[in-house]
Length: 397
Ligand code: ASP
Ligand code: MG
Image 1 (tube, rainbow, N blue to C red):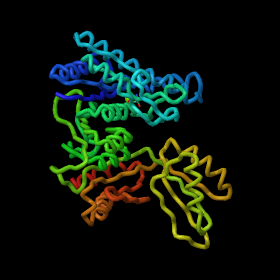
Image 2 (cartoon, helix red, strand yellow):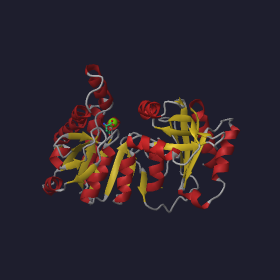
Image 3 (cartoon, helix red, strand yellow):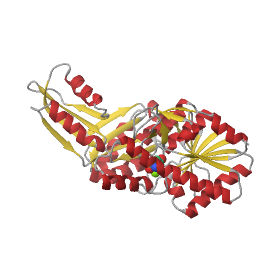
Image 4 (cartoon, helix red, strand yellow):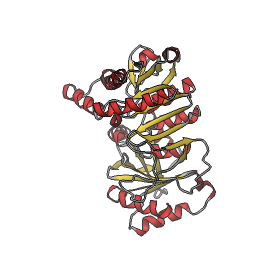
């Protein structure tokens, strides 16, 4: 017996049959004597379809109206799921972020949750109701609806788990856990029983699209026990937690990220302050930079290359062209970032060499390299990404 938060992604509630299946999972949990709060995403491709619909009407709709529109996807699936549970004869109520009191900052389309009020949720639970919450949304200080960025329902679930001090937050999805690599690409990939928050954070941000990054940050901050599991198979998933004892692996996973563009600014003056000026400019424009490479200065000039997320390419180029009218600026969108992640590498030399050897063995050229305590990333040609990922995976795992 306990308080369990269950989150169901878009594919898990894609149609009536799947909604009924999810209703079954929730009521089974409830029947065993638990309090259940479920968080849902919009059904299937609803969010993408709504975005398309918006653009049929206005090519540049305001973010406020976009949030007004997109949040309806989650509201619909929350109500539908509640109806399926009603039909099974259980007490249930669906709630939007506004009804719960999930407040966020004002950044439409990518808002951060500030607080989750627990009164309404507790009141419903005290009346022994199953509560279904619309994920992905918040309310800002202007009483406007915001959305939390793509994949944001995970964050809603974790925030609710933290606010209610739930025993566990289970993220139900169409995969049955976190794998050592995308099994569609690396045929030897296997499921992990456990993974640390930090490893999961690296993998999430590297494009292993299992959990949204912010949800893992939040889980780490509030020590929420997370489990990623399948909504189709009744088997244990992958537990995300602070310390992993069982499997002490050197490398936990290999991930590929295609959402990346390399930009180079050529012929910058080789004097102090140049990098500062460049990256401040990008920062002021809310452009996150990932891998950075600066060439050795020659003949008084140097080049700086860096990567940005693909959807920031145009704004980055616009900003750079405006501020560096006399420099050549090049970019390449046909790149991928492939990374190995593992807390075991902190105490082991030779991980980088082994990774580069694997790349060499399949003839893949490295454009850029970056490392952190538990991660090594390389930027390579996108057409090489799948074979690189598989070669690296099989070298370590
Ligand atoms: N429906 C939103 C999206 O597709 C949020 C979510 O699924 O978590 O990004
Ligand atoms: Mg979705």
